[in-house]
Image (cartoon, rainbow over all chains, first blue to last red; front, top):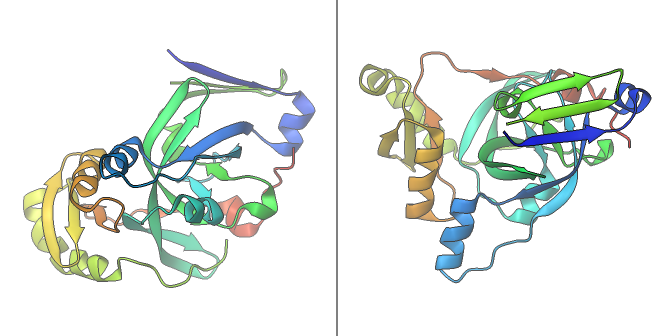
Length: 144
Length: 88
């Protein structure tokens, strides 16, 4: 069972949240293979920090990352905003964590730059893992 | 979370909504792959539908949606309220 463990401190975990550093976000492998077969260039993966948000039902990727990767939408999801429910596009993304790869996850886009993260990991992705939040030890463990 | 601007795939979404009742009888809980106003096929998983979509259309937009009675509403309380604090 692949295991990914992030160690910080109890204080950092409490104040900054469960940050996963150096997450790689790229095109899904199926799409990379297809573009390569056609001799088309594939954008380089983007690396940044992600924040685990157990309150979010779905995952979100920063819009500038989606734009850099030149990914086309593959669907629409209904999201609840302060102005009520609205439709928003879904984009296919590949997440690579050390020892863990999540290929083809459909995510939403939002401006996450003010928060210093490239992705918000919601319960759609967390549903694939066993997650241990060790508050006292300042540690988050994900096992696939 | 800012209110999003105009979405892409609106034509496909309208087509899906217009056919949903009919498809629910035949394809409940399957994933529909749609391009413009054509149902390409239905699949058991999102991944299978995506694979076929990429095979046919590469990195062009196409539409995948689960055929189910209830529309799921995604929620992001912290992001919506702007109360995320993720400084490292």
